[in-house]
Length: 175
Image 1 (cartoon, rainbow, N blue to C red):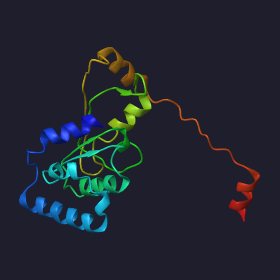
Image 2: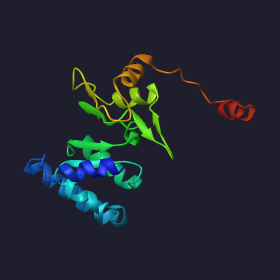
Image 3: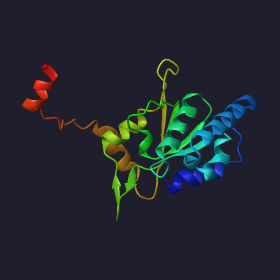
């Protein structure tokens, strides 16, 4: 989370929007502030007006939805995100940068699973727009090229359903 916020702060003076886009962001932000004044993440506003945003579990759900909407409209050019962005949200990008192949847990770092890596990498390339997507993997002190290759060539892990049908559920579906 801190890394996402620090990256936005680093780029908040790099204007990635033209005048029209900046006006659109200002208008959307004004409407959002009016509707949800307590959900505005003030430390993120300056970057947002430049086309840069953070998306992580430390942001309120309303704010994350707002970021997603602006990104889908093409008004945010760069999103720094944790794996929160990879799951269940339709936010494809031309290029995805994965800054670490491990994640911090309570007391140590754990390598991503191959499914987690594939889910994040799968955001690269916009269906119907891009012929291909690009994924950039950044080496860190926590993992090297060997771990990266193992993850990449391991392939997807099998999905194991947790679904169990009960008699009551079947009766509800039939009735």
